[in-house]
Amino acid sequence: MGHLNQFLFENCRRDKRRLKMEHPYVPRDLQLPGYVPVSLSQSTILTVYGLSSLLVVSLVWFLSGRSRSISKLDRLLMCWWAFTGLTHIILEGYFAFSPEFYKDKTGFYLAEVWKEYSKGDSRYAGRDSAIVAVEGMTSVLEGPPCLLAVYAIAKGKGYSYILQFAISLGQLYGTFVYFITAYLEGDNFSASPFYYYAYYVLANSFWLLIPSLIAIRCWKKISSAVQSQSQKKNKIR
Image (tube, rainbow, N blue to C red; front, top):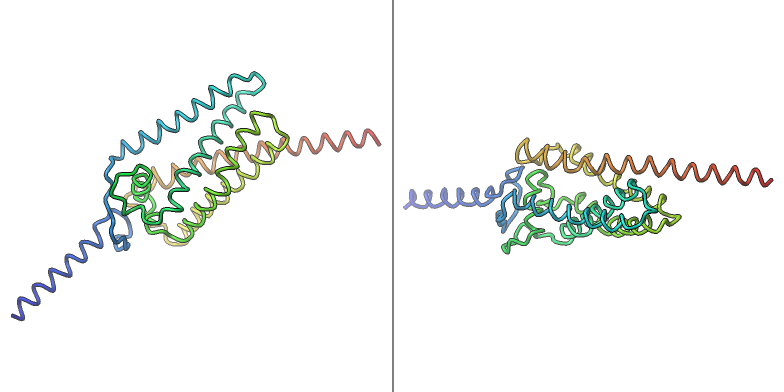
């Protein structure tokens, strides 16, 4: 009888260990009760995201081309702001306000995206407080202004450069916080080197490079406008 109890105890312990480790994320002992594996393939998830992004960019590029007063650079910027704005609002917004996305059994696309992305950074599946805070603020405070930037550029509004500069600084701040907090916590949240470099490094690098270039351009434009205004005032005096 004692051997039977021991046998049952060992089996129960192995089953619990297996349930705890059934997810593909690192660290392996990350607690995700009720986790449901990704049902869509990686290629499907990336293809849908790529085609959706291409559709948005193509639509903005086509519509902006109907106005001859908008330069090609500004049209590209409109495409970027539309793409990143919708990414912030839809993708990141879903993550921020869906704490149990990893339990989704329906195959809902947005839940599948974050289950897949969590292979590159398990802090998303684990609902790390810093990640939730950054993504929540990004979706609410940066998403809508990005779409406003599209309108401001199209209409040649005076606040266009200041708005783009402010959003770019916010994106840079959020991205730096994202990378720095991972480093301070050991930077060991990826299931493999592939996911680390493809998802964690490459996918996020665009939100360092592009906002930096936009911020520099806007700074120059704003400085030039202020300097020109100062020179006009001096001439009047």
